[in-house]
Image 1 (cartoon, one colour):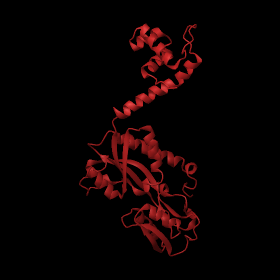
Image 2 (cartoon, rainbow, N blue to C red; image 1 turned 60 degrees about the vertical axis):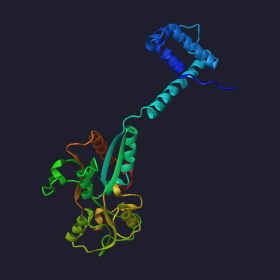
Image 3 (cartoon, helix red, strand yellow; image 1 turned 180 degrees about the horizontal axis):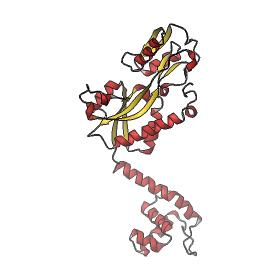
Image 4 (tube, rainbow, N blue to C red; image 1 turned 90 degrees about the vertical axis):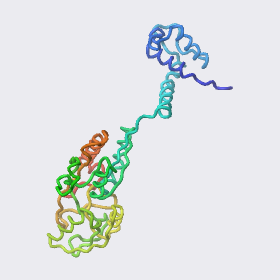
Length: 311
């Protein structure tokens, strides 16, 4: 037996009758005569060979088969609308090019980005990671629309293009000493074995200066150019390192303050965008990331055990 194809025009008429509560009101909504509405419902009933309404009741009451059809009808109409929008008239896609410092982007940011995509599916974010100086140069050259980098750049008078950029505070990071979860290294003993980023990293001079002021000696056993290599070296117990709590992943732990290491300063991260010519979506993305970071900071212990800063 050949299964007939449903006519979506008849299905739409049926849904309108149900929503309106009468053939008369449905006719007004669809700008048709009542006899035309009656004919469409009759054609649909003939197609499925079942009555959709109980004929003896007022107001209208669906038959058992009518309730079943109604359950599918809205889905059919929604799918029809989705196909037309997707193929014949796709929504406008807002593109934002985002540059972020590497340590901010690896662990939590993809999860936040997934949440953003669910909320705003018509916004496409293309991300790139790098050092603050390179990202800010890319923003000036209009290769990025929004950048997350070290704070304070717009206050640097020697930078000719700094006045053209807008800076907005994102986060005050508390840097932390880290080591492998099952580390055999005693942080109290010199020389202290270290895993470090390259010379251009802002974390490196901060850590070495703190050790120098504390009168500690050290030896750099591993130097990595990218965050994953540094994280791997820490987990391999090649040495201690300095990370943002955002970069602490399973296999790495924070070192307590009673372990003989000097305290580390807080550093600021900021959003940067151009004062003119930025896409309107920039502020929406910045607001979302700002709120995501605030939630992470408030729920760090619950969201990822072991990320709370040591006391």
